[in-house]
Image (tube, rainbow, N blue to C red; front, side):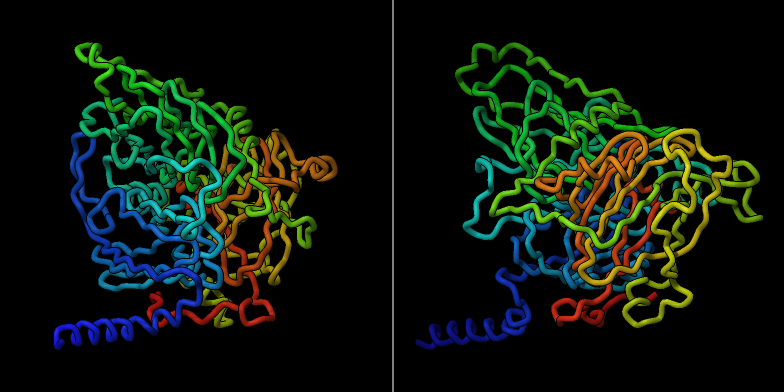
Length: 576
């Protein structure tokens, strides 16, 4: 009797202990807790050992799994000398902008010995996303998958897979990446390219001295869901599995109309879910899963190929071939600058646009913006000896403004009404002057610099055209927007024509995503509703371009209702 009574009392006390958290969680999910200890870890790749910044000593970092509707709390404790922030890439962060993560945009960094709890609820999202550091180049090793499962009892809108497998692409440098970018910014030169690409942290068999390879063992006649994540710093990638066709079913945690392909393109910041239907019988062969760069710009790039190995579990029925050495098949990937393939692939992506998963694209627009994105030059300081003309270096800009990182977080300055001296609200809605954007560049290619933002009233229906420029060289730019998904309503090569091109916009089933590749020598048009109050970063997800200033921010004002206002910051928000 007494032991039973004690067990009942203990259960009741536990329930009371958790009650405040359950009361605070005003959603239909549960609360999930994670601990991220930022620490150094020695890792060996390409026969060379170095210390890297990791979460919990893992590389890639730990997997976060939640369901749609869940509240997630991640306590990040910084045990290294670097300042740290973590971004939950693709999470909408509805009224939780304090948890978004980009350094000096929504928060000051977590300094050595300090901690911060990222607290957000996953609303109306399910699928594959990821998390990564969002300060300097630390995301080279600080990244990991974030999987959002549907609500319990809700099936996928495609055949239930036999197994789900993460495939995370990364980049590996033998040297320290912080040293590389710091030296490049000081000298004005381009940073060194990576020494290898990786799949789940491993370079694979096509590199010298690459002993570790990711292997995916499969059963014949089964369907596997591969969750692809491009966590590489500076390279878009082509990916293919030798002798296998896959079905694309989701991008950026949004379901798409399924279509088959042998090869796909995935930019840094993008995710893609594919169904792999294995062969009906186990072949006496292995198949490389290979990825290499899709590179369009004038700069040097890592022209190597990473690969994992797909191998079948050999059944007794193929024992007759057991003594034969299995053949190795390698996929044929497009040439490194195949812009037409990339464009055609992106045009195949369409939203489901069903009653259950509608395409909520704004049919009308209240604000239109035209942004040029590309490279230019900027004068260096007198104590620098930069390689460009008249002591200049390469810079990147949006509408000729190269973004200057502030020393105070923009969101705090906005929330407390202390923007003076931190940012200005005069970001240009159009380029400062018109020119043949994808043709002969103008004679003056110097860019301006500043910390400028665009202010949007709550619920503004935005149309934004992003136009690549050929200044220094045409190049594809994967643009990522924090705090929102957007619909890609149009895209094309050459200069955007505001009179002709809008007539061809897709307002029925355009793809919805959070990162889009601005085509090399072309343009892309997106629409979104500014229904999330806060300060939201938009930047190129090629880290070198972000370092050079290809970034800006949107300030979305509060709405009139209580549930349309940004709450105050949490007590443990880091200070600058």
